[in-house]
Length: 121
Length: 164
Image (cartoon, rainbow over all chains, first blue to last red):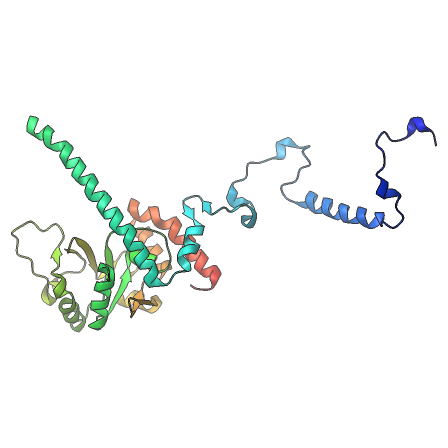
């Protein structure tokens, strides 16, 4: 063998091992490559113009859904669906009272600001 | 200690009033993570039911919301007969009694699709989420439209679970 034309990359030792089924290993590798190439998002990095922006909703939700999709937090819904209706109502009640109090305070603050202006007028 | 919605629902159920929990609380009962400030109920407009409704709500001393001080407030069977939708208040709480709702109609029109749920020890009828979505969309107010994505996602997850 002419050493001048030999591959600059040395072959791994295990390729020389007769116990290893290299054909099978190559087959398995090629299957995974084919499945990758068949994936709708695959363009081999060669056709930049074909890349289109994809929103999270278009991607596989099992891989990319972290709970939030737009205005909706699905993890929160899933959490509520695990409760009984009475438990949901009691959980809601604490938030309802919180919102009521927040609105009351905001209203008080607004009228307090208006009062000095009215006195001046 | 029962909260205001539980006490109202218990009082009406004990008096055998025919009503359906509608509005935001119906969404909450079905698992939607939203916050609503008032309790909305759709009631059946038969004379027997109006009498039972007025009697069951009497202990709450309801007043029409926004009624000026000094104006006499009467909330009884007769006033229910002369009106349709009532916005009421009691104990710093809000209660809306609806005879009819946008796009979906009154008690008779929705009771067939209502869902029965156990709330505070009583079996109560709750407006189905598809009906709630329809009426919210028809009402079209910003606060109604804002909760639509959450309601639709909750409905979808319930359907995925086989629960709706």
